[in-house]
Every structure is written in structure tokens, then in C-alpha cells.
Length: 124
Image (cartoon, rainbow, N blue to C red; front, side, top):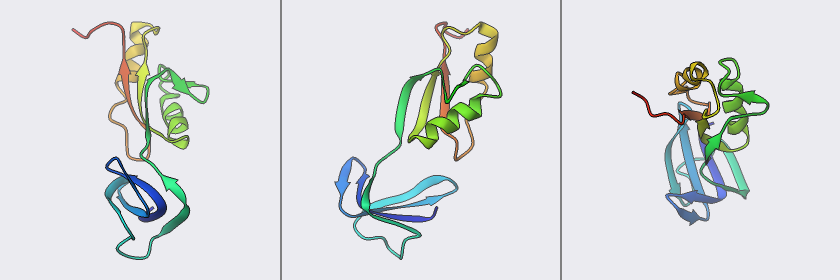
């Protein structure tokens, strides 16, 4: 996406009017209050840009489950499309053999919501 400017942006917990951020490799490389250092690639003067949401208890998303190897990417992409950039997959009710499917999917590549898995049994 490059350089993004917004009429309002949350940067380091502060409300900035205006604000900007720059991405590199699918991640935020810089963010600051004020006008951007160069003409932006995308300009949203009437919008508010906020950090991605964190969902601490999910079983999947968009009809896909984190216990299904083929559905993990689909579930993560569903959350990302709706503003959730980090999820904690709950696999408590899954059979132990299925828990390893979700646990093996970390870390994920840039552009896909980051996912972690939790079970009711401590490892070891």
C-alpha cells in the first residue's frame, strides 16, 4: 500500500488529526501525526484509521475452522478482511490430534491475520 494519509489516525494510542503511516512488506514501517512526508499513495481525508483488532477467542471464521488444515487460511483471511489482525484460536473442544493442525500454523505470512492456538491442556 505504501504511504497512507488519513484525516484522523490513532498513532501510539494518541488521536492525531491528521496522521499518516507507511507500510513495507505487509507491515507498518512508520506512523506519525501531522501531514505525510511526501504525497500519499492513498489519502482518506474523511476517515479514521485505527490499529487492527485483536480477538482473543475464536474457533474459526467465515464458516472455516482453525482445526481444519485447509480452513486455517480462510478463517484468518476472514478476520483480516473485517479488521482483526491478530487472533487467538481456541481449540479446547477439538480432539488432541486436531489441535496440532492449528498449533502448527504459526507464524503466518504477512497479509494474513496472525493466529495462535490454545488448548485446555498444558504442553508437556
